[in-house]
Image (cartoon, rainbow, N blue to C red):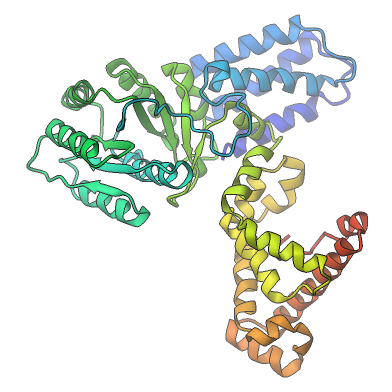
Length: 461
């Protein structure tokens, strides 16, 4: 996400290398590049002008620390202004401590806490309702009820019903003959009787903003008095997303924004524009099509990612959320007792990495210097991981536990079973043996040796 902007800003830092200090001339040159980078990222012109003016003012007015190069100094100012632009201290998440279960929405009310989803058709509103329900159920232990008030779009109710079943939350039945306000009120009554903590109302979307749509959602809002009214907007719509956000913000007392499909847009300018236009915080971002592909939005972390500094806090949270800590502890204990590292352990590491979104998701959150090589061919690496797992799956349980048994005839059988060449099996065994050596170094306390030997350990790295 936001790859183009990240690359352009990295180029600006290189451009300032060799400069002794920030001057009006080199600041003007650098800001011209920043302006072009933001416009190419589809950030609104008014937003860009305001942003550049603030960066220029601070660059010329502030004394730069002697320990910083001009490039570092300018990027520091740009980083601070990006944080302010996307939420700053007003954001529900900006500057937040790295809490694993931090929740950017307000549920402090008499149950059920009502969340109203608003947005255009095709923005990912229904899917976001399901993702949010899953997050509230699994990470915050809430009893959630989903209801669809979209009586216009074909199969909208069925889509939400299917999602509710898939993620294991309750669904309030409705049909196209009912009025949306009546559906919402009936669901509220049901949620109270059945002690639901949260009721998520998926309102109807339209293909474009129209008066009937706005009147209807205003009526639902008045009848339900939701504690959260979340506007769902598609990051890939670019400037259209900003115009739609402005219209909804004028019609409804929005409490926040969900920015969807951020993973599908290398420009991502909507992330920088929506908060500025609406004055409402971006609370969540959709980062994949999977049902767990929703993350709380942190302005400071997003700014770090845009500037190529990575997002290590989110990486740690992903690990805590997706990695099986019991299995990790079991593996650590195994090494401690001096037992060998086998192919079952190797496969477990691949599975854990896939749970965290695979190599591409991992690299997206690492600083640019670390992820640059891997980012050149993420699809190739993901494919290699799948092939590696296929080879391991073609081994017998005994072969996985005792890799020393893997002689020529067994290798041929494994290659045939996995649909690969024998050379690939040999290559995997070589990688595995290198990793075995690395694990022995860990056991012996040779951490420095292990770090030097890590290159090439994992498939596709």
